[in-house]
Length: 298
Image 1 (tube, rainbow, N blue to C red):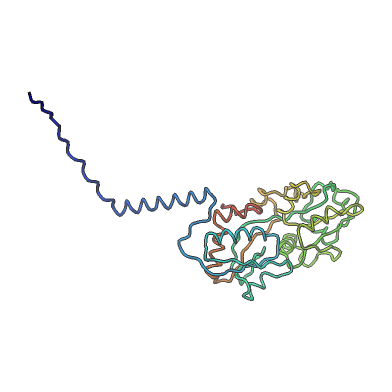
Image 2 (image 1 turned 90 degrees about the horizontal axis):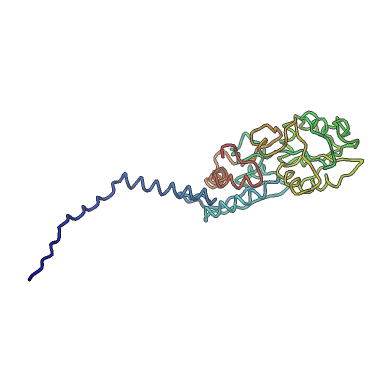
C-alpha cells in the first residue's frame, strides 16, 4: 500500500524593494542625530566634519587659566591636528599681544572696538572680608566710598570698630577694569591700598589681617566661593542686599559681574573661530561651568 504526502504550496514572499533616496537620507540624519545625542550625554567633544588644523596661541593674565587650559585640551582631542599654546602671565597685557600678532585670541573682561568679542561665560566680583567681620551688607555706593578713601572705618558701615585695609589689584587685570567701571571710580582708587595680583594671595592676606585692621578685597567670585566652601576664614558680602551666588550672577540680579570674553581680530583665523565656537558649544560650556557661570542660553 502506497502512502502519499500532500504538501500545500505557498507563494514565495515578495523581494523587498530597495530603499528610496528619501529613506536613505532619513536614516542618515537619524544616525547623525543619535551620535550628537550620545556625544552630549557622555560629555564627549563634538564630532567635526571640517578638518581644523594648525597652531593657536591664547593670551591671558587672570584667574581663567585653569578653564582655558581645560578647554584647550578638549579642543585638541576633538581636532587632532590642532595645537593650542597658552601664553599666560600676570604682568602681561593680552590685548597688546593680540594686536601685535603674538596671539590669535586674548582672554579679557571688556570689549575693544577694533576686535571681535565672543562671550563664553560670566564671573562675579566678590567683596571679600574676614569671617569675623560682621558687616551685614554693603551697597555699590558704599563700596565706591571705601575704595576711594571716603570711608575708612568699618563702624561707618555697621561693622566692627576697626580700620579698613584696602587690597587693590594690578592695573592690567580684567577684574580691576570691570570693578572700576561698575562703580564709576576709574582712576579714583586711593593710593593707600595694597596691590596684590594673585587671587590666592589676596585670600591669604584677608585671612591674615587682624585688628586693629580688617581687610577688604574684590576678587573673582569663583575663587571667593571656593575659599568659603573650603572653610577658609573669609566671607563674601551681599551687595545691595543680593547674595553673591551663581544664580544671581547668571540672571543679573548681582550687578558686580564681568563677562568672560575671547577677543580676536575682526577677521579671525579659522582656528581661532573654531575654538571660540567650541567654547560656546554644550561640551565647552560644561567646562566653563566647572568654575564660572555659563551663558544663559546653555
